[in-house]
Amino acid sequence: MRLINKYVHETFKSTVDPVIFERTAARGIIMDNEDILMIYTKRYNDYSFPGGGVDEGEDIRNGLIRELEEETGAKNIEILSTFGDYEEFRPTHYKGYDAVHMLSHFFVCSAERELGDARPEDYEINNGSVPVWVNIHDAIAHNREVISAKEDSMGLSIERETLVLELVSKELL
Image (cartoon, rainbow, N blue to C red; front, side, top):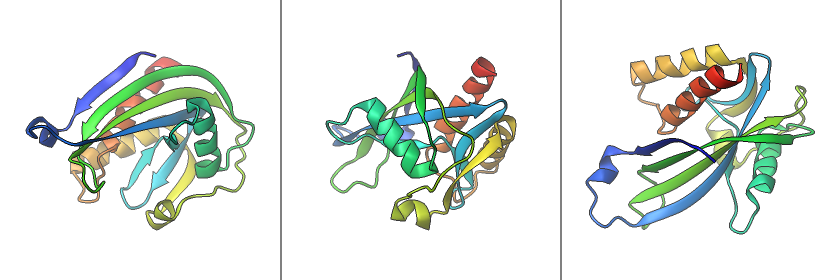
């Protein structure tokens, strides 16, 4: 799979012999014309791709379908193609680790537009995360505004999500 981007957070660059937590994630790109299925998170005021961590020993494609069903309630999910990988080294909240090395695999998928019942985790509920169909250009503009305003609530993943949204807009519309 092609490498979309490699991001190294500035705090990671200055850490000597960091203890790194390895995380693999799978994220779905599901579109209906110019609408895209995203997760809007109230806490961070941003749009992000549905998906998440793949369990140890779990097939990445099975993990993606599981995550999409849990986070969005999407039905009849089909993985159509790979889109690319986004690699990042950034600060982490995991105890005993200085940084996380996250490799996010993005896949183009299809699913029914009508969503079933999502099964979000407690932290997703607490963060106000909800699945939404949104115009891709509106999602990009919204995330860019949050980045420009450097909102206090801004999370670390918004740059990744916005860069991939822009690439999807250029390549898949």
